[in-house]
Amino acid sequence: VEPAAGYDGPRLAASGSVRVRVPAKINLHLGVGPRRPDGFHELTTVYQAISLYDELTADRADRLELVVEGEGADVLPTDENNLAVRAAVLLADHLGVPPRVRLHLRKQIPLAGGLAGGSADAAAALVACDALWDGGLDRNELATLAADLGSDVPFLVPGGTALGTGRGEVLSPVLAVGTWHWVVAVADGGLSTPTVYAKLDALRDAGTVPAEGVGAPDELLAALRQHDPRVLAAALANDMQAAALALRPTLARTLDAGLAEGALAALVSGSGPSCLFLAADADHAASVAARLTTHGVCRTVRTAHGPVPGARTTP
Ligand code: C5P
Image 1 (cartoon, rainbow, N blue to C red):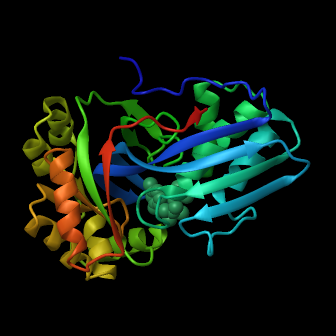
Image 2 (cartoon, rainbow, N blue to C red; image 1 turned 60 degrees about the horizontal axis):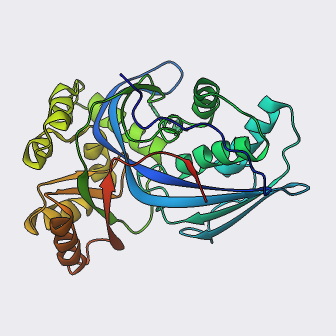
C-alpha cells in the first residue's frame, strides 16, 4: 500500500525563499492507553489532516529569526520556545549547517485547541528549511526529526489519514475513501495537553471513567472505507473528551448545540477545547456552522474538509 499522501520530496529554493502550507489535524479515533515510564501515554489514534492551514515562509537570512502574524501572534513565543524555531535548529544541527533563516508564520490554526497547530508549524519548518538549505532529507529522516519535536509532528509531514501508535509518532497508512466535511468550533482560550492527559489519569484512578477506554479503532477504520457519513458518525471516539469536559464543563453546551443544529456527530478535537462536528456534505457543514454561530457557545466557527496533504511547498 502506498503511504497516504506522502511527502513529495524537497524542492530546491532557487529564489532563496520557500513557502510551505501545513494543515491542522483532528483525531477521528483517540484511544489513550496507560501512562508509560517516560511520561507519555500509549496511543491508538486515527489522524486526519483538515483544510485549516498555517503558512510558513522561509527566507535566507544571516541569523535565525521568527515573525508571527494571525492567530495568537500577540502571545506566541518567537524564540526557541516556539516549535518552528526548534525545528529549524534541530534540522540545521542534523545537516551540519548554520541555522540562518527568517521564518514568517501566518497562523490560522487556533492555539492550544487540540488541532496540533504548534506541531503543524514544526512540520512546516522542517519541510521549508530542508528545501531552503538543500538538505534533501528522505521521508524517514524527516519523520525521525519530526518525532523528536512532538508526537503529532510526524503525521503533519505526510498528512492525509493515518493510524498513529506508540505515543502517536508511529504511522501506518489508512485506506480512506472520499472527502469528509467538518465544522470546527474554536473555544475561547486553550487547554494544555499535559493537563488534559493528567486529568484523564486522575479520572481513571478515581474510577470515574473506565481505564480500558475506547479500545481499537476497527469500527472507525471500516467506516472510513465505506464513506457513509452516518456510519462514520457512529464510530468517532475520543478518550480525551471526558477529561477535557471535566476541565471545561461548558464544552458540553458546545457539543449539544452542534447536535441540536443537525450535526451527525460531535466530539472534542484531540485534547480540546476545539469541538468537531461531522456534516453530511459541504452544504450541510456550511448550514450547521452558520446556525452554530448564533448559539454563542464558542469564539468562532469554521468549516473544513479532509483528508488533505500535509506540509507542502507552494508557489
Ligand atoms: O509530544 P508532545 O510534545 O506534543 O506532547 C506534549 C505532552 O502531552 C507530553 O509532554 C505529555 O505530557 C503529553 N502526551 C502524552 N502522551 C502522548 C502524547 C503527549 O502523555 N502520547
